[in-house]
Length: 329
Image (cartoon, rainbow, N blue to C red):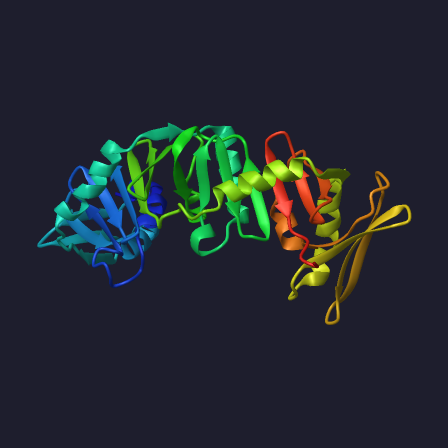
């Protein structure tokens, strides 16, 4: 049964250490599958356990991790029993109405899913760094676009999965997602299919997500971009001055001065750190950026541009466009 440890991280995404729903912290065995459901996320995997019913997944996980290779187990009187040298444990097997989960199996059978690949997966992973709260807490997949925003930052990718319906992806699932998975949506539910199982997550309606506004913004800034500098140089400068910001909000001034670009963090509490970079052109810049957001952007061949209309910094590569709002306006 210790082999179960390999899939427990996936099953835990359907769990919550709470009293409601009653099965929120249980792994439920049907005899042919294992199921978890916390009220928001449902996970079902092909896996046979020698009992039907549910046991506390958090307790089971701890027991299995601490067993030696010589352990034994059996089922007796609605108890899952473990024996290992001088240790023994009895885990209560609770019974649940399996018909409660039939709707999720039906949704998985009816959903039309799209195949991910390395390119779309990488875009989704990057987009997770730019989500907000409420209606903006999801990454949205639509047609051949992947979008996210928190109103201070905007992410746009023209490399999507080709879905006509809007798919809401919860960034909390990114460590589970894989380029070989399939993703779809049905009845405000996001469905992810993987080898041997599937996950269904109930999502709020995302039809208020500003897809049209983001597309309009991207089209506008493309015609208003002034080349500024290589992004990696700017990011490296922020990495160097970051230690000075410990315990503070990492807002960074980026300002041109004669033949240099000054990247500077200043705090009355901690002090001042600055990196001077050579100017690559004669563009004058005076903006304040959220340095924490900049440092989260994974390595990519970006070039940094200035949006001459709104004085924001725009990062652009062959695949992505990222807008970083000037927080000093």
